[in-house]
Length: 339
Ligand code: NAD
Ligand code: TYD
Image (cartoon, rainbow, N blue to C red; front, side, top):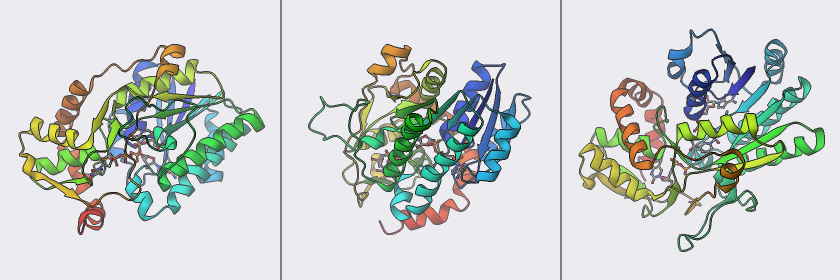
């Protein structure tokens, strides 16, 4: 069995590759990644010499390159993680989001059709459902919640999802889609909330909380997401969407305070800054379908997962310090300098 994983040098893709090599020692895993600012080859260092693993530096929008790779590898399963993934960057510059997230998805699916893959899996997000109000804790996203996006990022992911379902209906491509809530864990790029706050707190720098910090996200430990995708690509029903989330809702401010506590840093580091434009209030997943059909349940509780994550950042300083010492400094200055 050959599984082609795109975006495998990023946060969730790399964790998925580690999971697959471990859980399926007889599988061949081929990773395709363009190595954008968010992709780090150092993340994959531990598997580079694994005979069951191949890394291929390639843009998923490169039709010829993708075709050649499919001709060579004849993958059985494709899992598409590759994307521009940061909402704040999408607000600054939407174009690359449309290119990679929508056009790239169509290029991957055209190759999947041509070479007759057994399963094309699209890694999507709960953000395609828009947001829920804070005063209605009884509401959750189900797979039938209408698509209703807020940011260029979520709109590009929603566009890709619609295209994936259209390829299923029009061409009979055997697709599945997972829509997951916010992930956290090792190798999370330090522009995102949890690793950014850990890195800043360790450096005694201000902790920039957008708006009042009331926005709620439904946090899932990355390994639990990877296990869900493994189940879906093997046992999920073709043409179906599966929501993935762990009923683990937290307000941003509570997460930042927890990080301060775990690191022994004062809450006086917290700085309220200008809110994100169009900022979604609350995400909350109803995971009943994946639980009932595939038996999936999250295994890591947030209290344990956040401790494990902080420990990982403490033990792997070089990984994130190399990142934040480079081009990322310009990004940080631009986004937070006058906020
Ligand atoms: P990430 O930004 O950490 O990684 C994205 C990876 O894709 C990087 O390695 C990057 O180099 C690669 N990439 C970008 N453009 C590419 C292109 N044109 N061709 C080939 N490779 C390219 O993102 P992530 O957080 O790991 O997210 C992975 C996927 O999961 C995305 O599709 C995202 O929408 C989805 N998702 C993320 C979350 C989350 O909380 N992070 C939650 C739900 C869904
Ligand atoms: P993020 O990690 O960017 O994920 P997403 O926007 O996809 O949910 O942000 C998580 C939440 O944290 C979101 O409500 C925005 C907020 N946030 C801050 O308050 N400060 C920050 O510096 C960042 C990056 C995010």
